[in-house]
Image 1: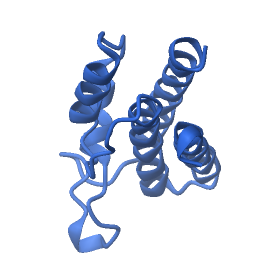
Image 2: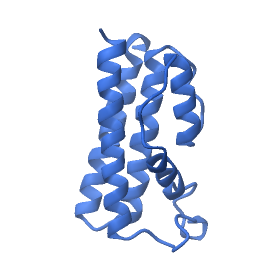
Image 3: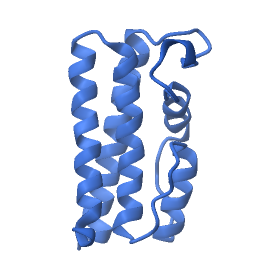
Image 4: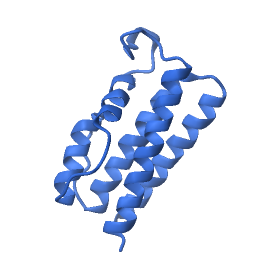
Length: 136
């Protein structure tokens, strides 16, 4: 199981991406954003797992990208603004009194669509990277 741990991380990331798609279609924008961020986080952790690196207990996508780049020994071509956006919408807690998503408040359709789009790009890029550089 640990030999292919990165595959488990990728599957969990894909499940979060799919969940975000379903939630967006249902008009549940806060949880769309949550699962979009989780998709990106788990895809980055898949890179670390593929390189047999420790998986930090962190939700910070910027930090995780840095760790992944260190593990790979080269930079990952990824939109830093997208990572910042997904970091900003991450829910530290799913309770209403703790929500500090965006400066404007709760996410709407536009933010949820953007979160889903960016998470999809990140997932696809990292999965392709793992398939190319690590599995081959």
